[in-house]
Image (tube, rainbow, N blue to C red):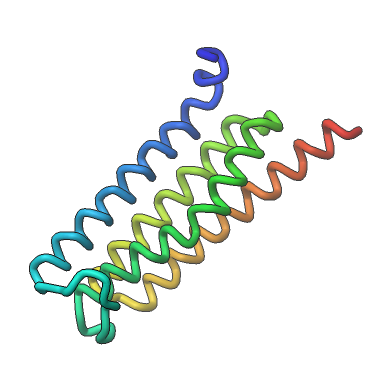
Amino acid sequence: MEAFAAIYLGTLSAGVTLAFLILLQFVVVDVSLIRARHVPGMPVTGGHESFLFRAVRAYGNTTENLGLFLLLIGCALLLGTDPRWTAIAAWTFVAGRAGHMLCYYADWRTLRSVAFGIGALAVLGLFVLSVMALCRLLA
């Protein structure tokens, strides 16, 4: 197991960093809800002019994208994809998600879309790496 962790240390480090980023978003949302005296269980209303709305949407968007990322990371690791390219894709996803979060908080809509696109391309890269590794195993 240590050898596996050593081979994929870059990818696993990106995963831990992403977990921290999600935890940070969770705390930002919670503190924002408390400061706004938001009634628990009620939807957050408003629009992009509200930081609370943007924080909730940033967190929600991250969690919406998490499942596919984790599925592809799991496939990539189990299929033995190239560790260097897998780590690059994983870190690119984390960077895209961090950029998306910060741009959402700042209400920079165009840059937020660019950051989202970076994360989406990283997921596509993980998919391609996984398919290539699967094809090698099937050959």
